[in-house]
Length: 196
Image (cartoon, rainbow, N blue to C red; front, side, top):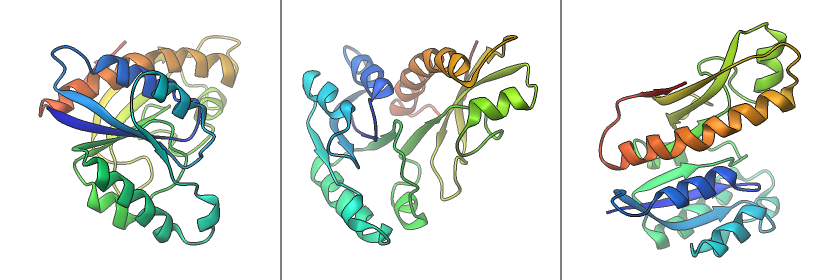
């Protein structure tokens, strides 16, 4: 049984779907949900689901990303996860941290990578006149929003879409895609999934 830790910065809707999926014959179980914000709403949701929580506030480490990550790593080592899932974790990780978790760290990104790495993905898709948008689960590497793609889900961009309306439709697909990819990944299957 694989042990999964989840990192988040906000409300944790993807974390909830991941935790809810890890039951029955699922090859993994959640062991820790951690945030860089001790007040993140996702921590309360994780506790309500019976998952251990912790936090390393990034603010005291301003300007010293390595020290922040060392504190994060120490808490992760206590939980001893096999897989680390980023679920709305809004801190850029250093190459040293990503290398330590190489092949064991997943992220979900709200665009069809390699398009629109970084922020404001929905506005950028609309502004570009794209016919479709979506989300991607990928292995994390040192490059921002890069790494082998493990799954994508596509949604049409509709006439009159705003970044908010498009984001809401993409989020529904994130909630389907991330648990599906994690189940396969935890079983040792890296074959990419496409959802429509």
